[in-house]
Length: 427
Image 1 (cartoon, helix red, strand yellow):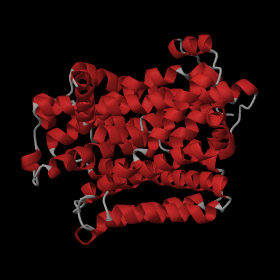
Image 2 (cartoon, rainbow, N blue to C red):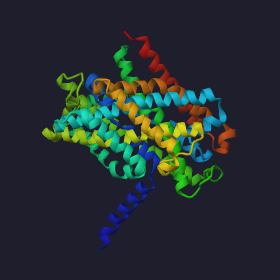
Image 3 (cartoon, rainbow, N blue to C red):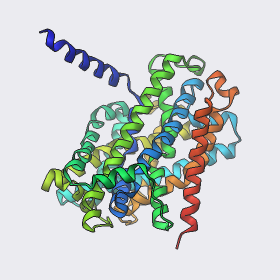
Image 4 (cartoon, rainbow, N blue to C red):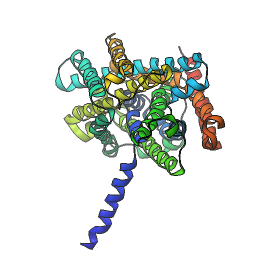
């Protein structure tokens, strides 16, 4: 059947392309964790279409930072914390780890709480039951299985988030306003606006993704049999091209979902006067034009799937950072008996997140403010990443090209400026 050959060829190319994707795609999917979904939903409800431009604006910034982290892991053969330990003083090392673990703990608590709340929404069973169940399930998978197994199973659940893309086209959006605010930035001098902007930056350019990306590039090399750091050092042009394609695809996926969540909630919630989201039910109602009564299930499955990716990345990035800083043996590929300290950090992170969640904060509010916290804490870590990857003594001839350095410093200026504006307008 000759007519089918082009189709088969296209399928083969498609499978080959996605088969080559790895850490970058997983990082991009994990970026749309429950905190991100909540932040984008709050944004669309509160400000309508006016912040759609942030999806385009943040894409090159987040991509540049993740590219630098990927290159750092590939070229040095070490994770981000491991490189900081060698190059900087202990206070810089442990200061960076403290920023990371603080943001991650809050984020873990918020994500687990969000997962519990949406499950309560569709089952009627209290989140007080579901939240520790999810923590135990994720911890068990990470300790007794592997993150790669989790990723293979649950990354498909995040495809449910494409429902927002479909919903945008059936929700009677004002497409003139959509195009206007996509390409023309809108800025307001209010604390709510700047807090929302910091939250958007914090959930797209998050500290945990920096450490995770570098460590996962190292894990990929270990899978190829490069056990020692000396064997892993350096990267070929082909390896860098593959990594670039992987990272750009992952970040594009992340920002595409971000864009359509804001658009859909703007068209459904904001357009009908519902400008404040305080419950998971309100966030789920944005999918009513597509799914009707099933919107709650659709939203819940998408958020739980994103949480099952996001929480392991949060806990795992803390474990990689602390283990590299303390020079402990640690990897998700290791058996628990050979990496007790590494898995201990994961367990403690989940327990602290559970404890924070039990403090009784509103789930949607906690998800949003965890993103804001990430936005405030990220700039110092971005500075460290830019300095490390621009250093010829560390990266050799693989140090950042000028355009990557420029984007890195722009990211620092933009995120710092948004944080300063938030505090300056605070009432």
